[in-house]
Amino acid sequence: MKNIIVLVSGGGTNLQALIDAEKRGDIRGGRITCVISSKADAYALERAEKNGIKTVILARKDYADVHEYSKAMLDVLDSEKADLVVYAGFMTILDETVCRAYPNKMMNVHPALIPSFCGKGFYGLHVHEAVLEKGVKVTGATVHFVTEECDGGPIILQDTVPVLNGDTPEILQKRVMENVEWKILPKAVALFCEDKIKIENGRAYVNE
Image (cartoon, rainbow, N blue to C red; front, side, top):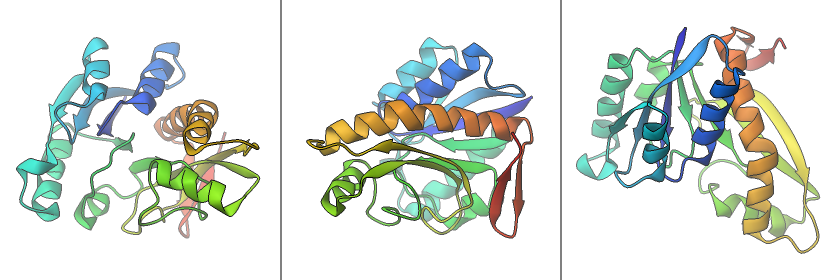
């Protein structure tokens, strides 16, 4: 049984999607054993506690720099015997030492179709604002492995939704979350836990 550690910073809707998937039996071979938050007041912590999941607060403001924070994060991940680390609305930067310690064992969900609308500065509503500004007709979300390159790791899963006339960033964000993020993130975690993802030459191949 693989230990899944989930990193959060806010409301934890993606965490809830993972919890619900685990309860349905969709995630075989793994379980969420710990939720780590970069903010003490994150509602995601309450979601974890309601479901009997261990929580750890690792507040970014308590550390002098990214290096010190990353070292503390590594210590917790190691002590929790992490097999998979999932970014679920985790808005704090970690340095390269963390993904180097857990190569192809850290995944993130990004609210756009990588390689579009990704990289530095593309997070939260900024992504959906950019999508609307560009006038694309289809958007979606991507689950990818975390590497030293921001949003540049191997792509595991993607799915799409239409961009509709009259959409605001908030409306589009909700559509992407509900129809894509909350589905493909648990699915990617399940695939990992069943050893159905292979990495070859920097690309992820899924065996469903």
